[in-house]
Image 1 (cartoon, rainbow, N blue to C red):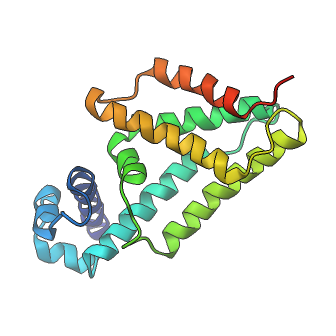
Image 2 (cartoon, rainbow, N blue to C red):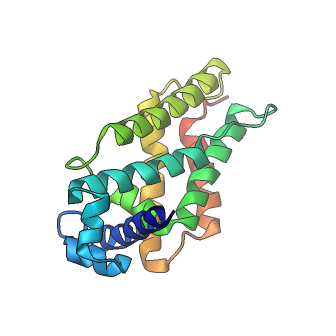
Amino acid sequence: MIALGKRLKILDGALAVFEAKGFHAAAVPEIAAASSVAVGTIYRHFPTKEALGEALLAAWQERFNADVLAPYPATATPRAALRLTWRRMAGFARSFPAAQRFLDLHHHASYAGPASAAAEAALHQGMRELADWGRRQGVMKPLPPEALTALLRGSLAGLARYAAVAGVIPQTLIDDMEDCLWNAVATRT
C-alpha cells in the first residue's frame, strides 16, 4: 500500500510538471521535487521518464473514458446522449483542469503506449456508437465518428485553453457550447 501511495504521488507530481512545462522540458529531479520523493524513488516505480509519461497518460485517459463513456439512461435520445456526453466531458475538465489540459493540449506520441492506444480506441468506439445511433434515428448528420470526436474534444480543448487563464471553464460557456455542438451535428428538419 505504501508503494501505491508513492506511485500516486509521483503521478500527481508528474502531472503538475508535464502540464506546466511539457513532457520534453520536464526534468526528473523537478518531478521528484513536485512529488516530494527522491529521484531514485521515481526510477523504482518507472524505469524511464517515458514510462512515467505513458503511465500518466493512460491513467488519465482511462479516468476520462470512465466518466464520459458511462451508459446512458434507457430513455435517452441521441440529443440527450450528446448533451450528457458533452456535460460529462466538461465535468471532467472542470474537476480535473490540469489533467484535461495535459490530455488535450500536449503532444504524447513519444511516450504513448498500448494502454493509451486502447483508451483512445474505446473513446472513438463510443463516439462511433453515438454518431451511428443519431444517424439511424435521422436526427444527426451522417458525419464520421472521428469528426464527432474532433468536434467534442476540440471544443473542450478550446474551452480548457480559455479556462487556463480564468481557472475553470464557466458553466455558462459549457451550456452555450452544448447548443452549438448539437446545431453542428443535427439534421435540419
